[in-house]
Image (tube, rainbow, N blue to C red; front, top):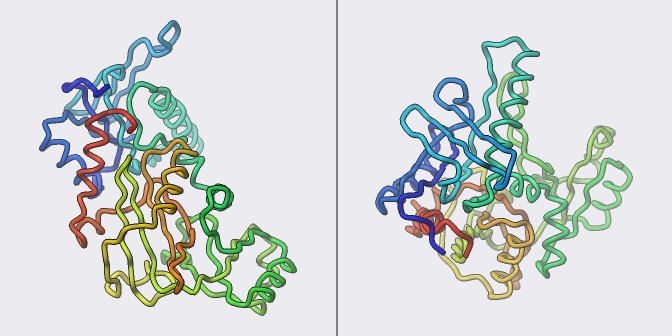
Length: 321
């Protein structure tokens, strides 16, 4: 059953999110009410009230921004698009840490309890799907081709893996903001040799993976029933290093791969996700990773694919396909 026409869509994002802007523009064109907010605005331009206790569990509640008010029982869908949480920089460290925890568990907990609206995606389900080892296991069970991979902090295991497979890359199990000498540093996917393994590996788990002899990468965005696949050719091991070197072609996926990607999202209770695959010389599509809340706006601009419209379709309907 479609959502009532006057029910709003909640969009949780920061003020400078161009991707969310594109989806909101599509919703505005359709006359769908939108309430945009950012958790970081709590206490200044954001107020929450939620009451619990009888049946239904959420009796009443509101989210109020500087310009809008929405009843939580009247929300048709929630687009959870990389919002930021408050840091309370004007408080001392202990007070800021305390207030931040209360915001996540108070504001976040109240919102996460909403079961009526469609979530794209529910942040707790995003989090559950955001562990690369969990992804490798799920992808393998669903029949997707997963390159041999080792996650370890054992230096001997790492050296043996590289020696036995030869062409191996290293990547981080989790991208994390990092500065060296005050300068932001990004962890790219890089080749690694056994001779480069030292005792630093023992400090924390590292991810080593056999390098796919690829001819291209494929970024796949799934939005409900819609699948958008774009072949990316660059000649780079990690195409994120130089966007100016990329060329794009809209492609169709093999049916078994498309089916497996839908099943992957279903396994984690997600309705959307951005997948990275690598295509080898035989045409095999190799699993690399899922970003449950990945970037896609630049691909719409480069290819003309109606990705933002697909999100608007899903949010307007307010229910899973």
